[in-house]
Length: 400
Image 1: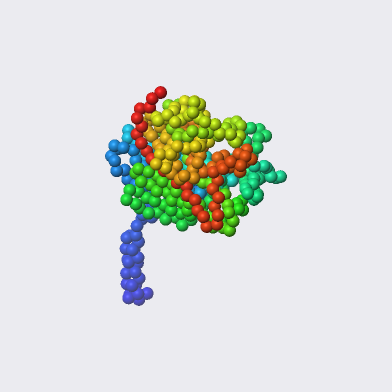
Image 2: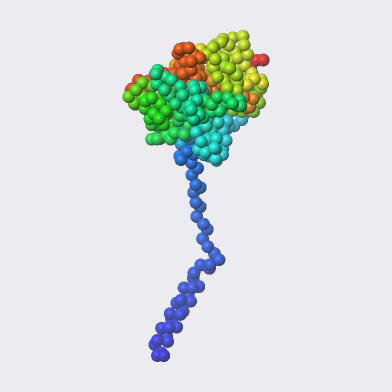
């Protein structure tokens, strides 16, 4: 080997050795970069939360957040508030979002969306509550009539009694997706809007409908507004309602109190079916009179009743849920004049469902003998709005 080539080889080896010595030892690796957690979706859409910062330093109650499920008909899943002496608390009887995602699977009990009205606040359109009708030959539909039109609705709610009748219940949007979501910051919170192009509600309705939804959060109120517009070619019946489960913060139901500004209630056949008989009775002087100014204690009485002939103050019919032990008060105000009845559902557990709706239960039923049951008729191009407001207050000490 020539002397010059030997020198070049030695030099190259030295450079290679130096390069190897400068490399990071294999045992020392750069730390892994954090990865974003997977986005939890329900009904194919991520949950949406409106929020605001507290502004009252704990001196008075105020709303802090609203969580919605756009993939499940905009279910008003959770509301949080700052309550003096209790801090931030959830107001809705709901599981965690992770548990809700498991329950809202579209399978099993949720095959027809039924799990949606088991917690939070599901919106119920174009009919809330029960439609009794007649069972179809295959048992899959409940058939009823409206002005000569036949409506075949999903039979999605079995009787609690063996061999009892299966009914259609709580509308046709519990699995609907909200489109065109837009969230805006406001002076004291946030507002979101969106639309459900419901069409003929999966072939079950007479005409086509668009539903425009607005949920607004401020410190003083949570406003929910839904406008239904007939965008089809035929007149159609329409009702709007919801099924919100409100917690009793203390967890002690017996001492919680209800104020319901209603003078009449609907009689039912029994509390397993809760089918209306078509008769209304005055509540005054009965155990169902919740008109006392400070409300009436729930004690051990279960409720699944439809209240009507609502008394309004400045146009609003406000039901009050009062938890004296927590010094907590919530008003659920029906702001739309079309809201004519309020279903109150409260078994012997720590929640009260206050369901503002247009209609009496089973509005197409023959038991009403032609009475106006509250369904609104929308002609092509016409609209109707449903609006409800939540507000907080600190109650005075209630009497016995």
